Image 1: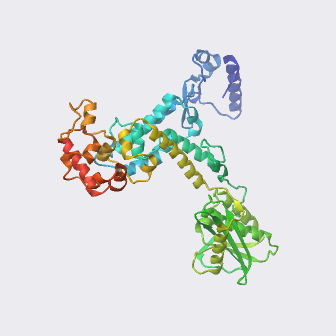
Image 2 (image 1 turned 135 degrees about the vertical axis):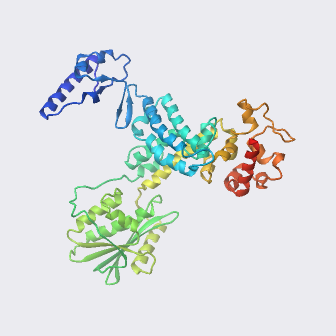
Image 3 (image 1 turned 180 degrees about the horizontal axis):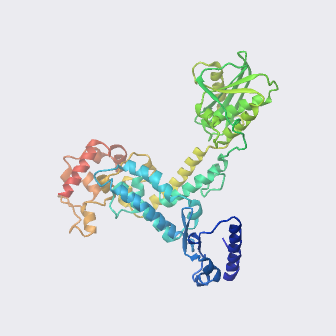
Amino acid sequence: MLKGLSHSHILDTLQTALQNIEDWCKTQKLEIAQDKTALMPMYIRKRTEYSTHPTVIKWGINVVSRMKYLGVMLDCKMDWFPHTQFLENKLLKLRNNLIRCSKSSWGISYHHLLTIYNHAILPVISYAAEAWSQSLSRRANIKLTQIQRSFLIFATKAYKTVSNVALQAIAGTMPIELALHLSKDIKAASRGLPTNAVLPKLKKTEVLTRYGGIHPKDNIIAIDYRGTVIPANIQIFTDGSKTENHVGAGLVVEENSKEIYTESRRLDNECSIFQAELIGIQMAVDWIQQQSNVNTSYAIHVDSQAALLAISNKRTTQPIAVNTRKKIITLKKTTQVSLNWVRGHTGIRGNERADYLAKIAASYKNTVTYNSIPISRAKQLLLNYYINIWNATYTNSEVSFHTKQFIPSIHHRLSISLWPNFILTQFLTNHGRFRTYLHRIKKSPSPLCNCPESPPQTAIHLLTECSLYSRDRPPVLTTQTLPQILQHHINTVTVTNFITNIFRSLQE
């Protein structure tokens, strides 16, 4: 990356840099691949000064307006529209292959298509979004929305005229702009960096860490998973407890079957039971480090396999586990320490006592000794934050009036089990074989229904009012509200068959 006060200054710097590179390559017996080398002037309309410069001509460097670097398409204006075009072409092949496997009435189901979208399509779109999504141009934003829209239309089997707002609500998929913000904030929170979401609790998020510099022969912590108490001079039992309002950890130390030391600590209410279990093990290791008798053997008994696996995993990034691993590795050089898994709530006195102390610490208003929330909780807070933004955008939108009668809010949509298909999506959007829609696209001379009342033939009218179907209509469609029908009855056999019969009669 070169910058200067003028074009000539930049080109002079370029000439010096290329000469230095060439000299170094000669000493190393290397050669620069000129066909892979390109020059991209930034924010410059006329590039003739660069393409005609003697240095550029001598080296045979191509002067380009865009280039691919580490999977991201850079462009000279940095509006990132070429990158969105690159994503569109990349994902078009995948979508076309999926279309061959799923049509309107057969093939891959909505559930599997949405899984493919969330775990294959969305990661491709959000790759390196921290670098490029902050300064997207308007046309780049539109292109991203079009990419998401094409997949949602395919997954929900909706008509191409359905609005983005309705599509996203029916699919239960967050708008791509919010999804990118969510992805960036999750990565930022896990690294201890500021987020776009203004949430004070995120400042207390655990920062993933690693501990290196340990010789491989020392970097092994063995765990006994037999489930029984192993013999040792000192028996230590730890446990964690979490209730609706409190989190705590307990420690019990026994010698010759006599209790010689107990300790309990309270954690922040946002902490998890996993963190409490790790804090319990850390308390045990800290207590052992304070003892002066190096000839004594210690056995730490824990009823959480997840916590022990985190301690034994040399690649763990959980900060409590990393800190405890470091202490155990140092301690084992001079002291005999073993970690053991025991079955919880099976009558082992030390384990039951540690569990009691953990609950006591969680119940009383003790001083909070650990208040960092886990990454999983930070992800949930961020997800709720962006869902609230999505809900506000959805409810305030002036489009998708028909869909809002079934799905009044995004929170309602995410609380129900909805499996959109070719027929159901038409009823949820009013875009289908209904006369109001056909008349609007000039496929029908009249928008009125054939029933004696002759109101406009909409999906809701056919579903709840039309007298032509009154004999077969399930009672719940006239006694319950549309959101209740969608939540409790839309997947029942009677309602599904009724909707299918209406659709077939419209095709005749």
